[in-house]
Length: 335
Image (cartoon, rainbow, N blue to C red; front, side, top):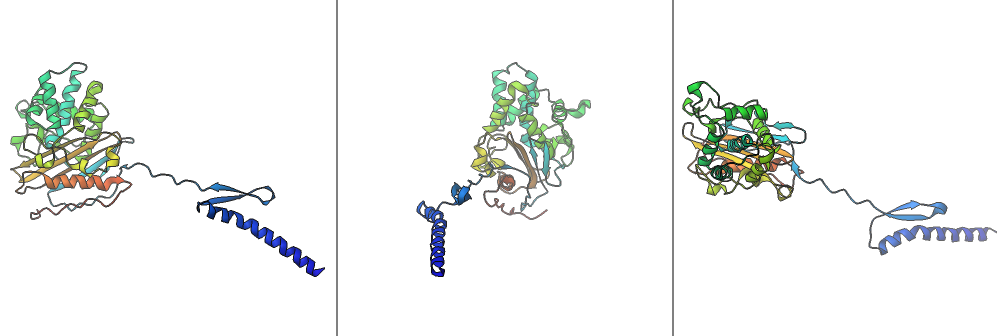
């Protein structure tokens, strides 16, 4: 009896072992795909494919540490999440810089909003477009005057209505017509309006959500800002060369999600010996501003500031596709 029992047990063991080896052998024959084995009635198994990994979300801009090898008098940045209204950025994002041509996006918006459903003259519409696309000063001055701007606020004691409307409509908290460190002689110039990075992103949001230009003209303004032209090499003091900065620091995956509307401001000023450079960009998801002052070099183009703006944008991309841009040390002595 004992040899028979042993033989029976051996046969059962062989059969069970073969059943257990079938799934593994099948997996090898089917190309080695990962399969999950689920037990069924009577000890059977069902092969189920492993779940497919969830793809990562599309890249966007989100708050993150920013490190820039900056050599200059002032540097700051701010980022607004336009879905929540949350503003994050540098610790000094409430400090101000002269806006320079960045303000032209507001000047054009303020003029067009006042028109309502009316059309501007053909000439003024052309100047409004050139003021944004080419950062043309002549066009900006003509639109500014049509919007009710005043170049002599001290003569009658009244504040500039164009700037005051920006403060009121867009909820700006740090913006002033002008003031230190600019000399008093510049107090009547719209380009010397003082604005902080956190106010600049509020301005971008105000333009994008329609409060600045109104329902009829908002899309037109954003489209003009999305078609700013001319690289930093094409930059001239009074017109041209405004497509650089934040836009250069964004990956193609972000640009492909929709238009990126931008307006930069830049001037090499004699009174303080600095380039005043500002970058503003806005999409349906975020608004970003970078502002700075740094010593003017022999170059007539704000190349260094353009690279700083691009670097900040790259470092805020989430999730990160790679290393952030490196900004070269400014080839002048520190202040």
